[in-house]
Length: 146
Image (cartoon, rainbow, N blue to C red):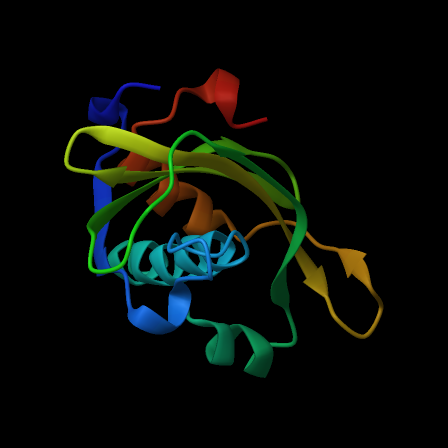
């Protein structure tokens, strides 16, 4: 996907503790990078944080994670993580992520989140106010918001 398709980026610098013996970022850390960027994206959208959701008896859960590695990030690299909501379902949403070093895409991925009642362990409808805000932020078409 073109870098210009992302309207939100979160900067992050690779720390020494995230590099493995091969002197590249250990693969599992990229999911942590996605999570950090998602948290900042959510905050920038003005949507309720995890604690507020929990207090309301609902939470977002990751149902599926897909990552594709293109090139490794190295110690002290300055990265920019693009985040965008590409699909809004009834109780789920798909977010796309790309991690860049300058203009080079190092990792791309997709996370499927489900909004659910943690006690009943069942999906619940995404609140209308969230839908409205995400559609505004992402300029989503009605076709992609089913």
